[in-house]
Amino acid sequence: ATAAEELGLDEFDVTTLLIALAPELESVYERIYGFLNDDLTIRRPTVELVTRLACRDAASRIARLSRFLPGSPLMSSGLLRMSGETTFSGPLSSCQLSVDPSVLELVVGSTSSARVLDRASERRLPGPSARREVWRNHLWRRAGTEPSDELVDAVATLLPLDETRIASVVRSC
Image (cartoon, rainbow, N blue to C red; front, side, top):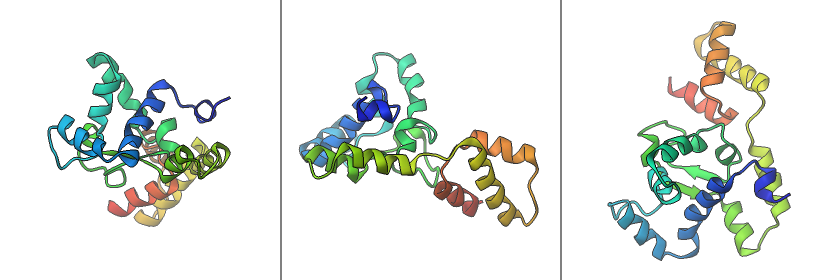
């Protein structure tokens, strides 16, 4: 199996990584992305730009937005980074994308795909029960009282984040 298959990445995810990787390899892509974003200060691809480039119609663009949510293979692997992901500020479509340095290392040959897979596996989201316990602990500390099972289940389902992002969300409340 390929590294993409082992991480659960589909063709759209791989295309997204390539689009986000381009400015790391050739600076001309920063200017191109600025032009395509209709804002020369935005030198990275945005979620909206990626979906416009990789999808044929509005329905498929909307369907592909789920690939940028925290629980998706692309995001939970940590291979793709998104501006504003820890603050939840701004619309998803305007978030700028960049690749994790391990992707660049793989492309330029300074690391192996096995090492990238190991790092990505370490960053993957905990399972649902582990995620509920992380949310329970953080909510308990923040509120000073044990949260109900219903609240913990609802929050863990709606916000499938890793432990670092959970802590960030709870701190900002």
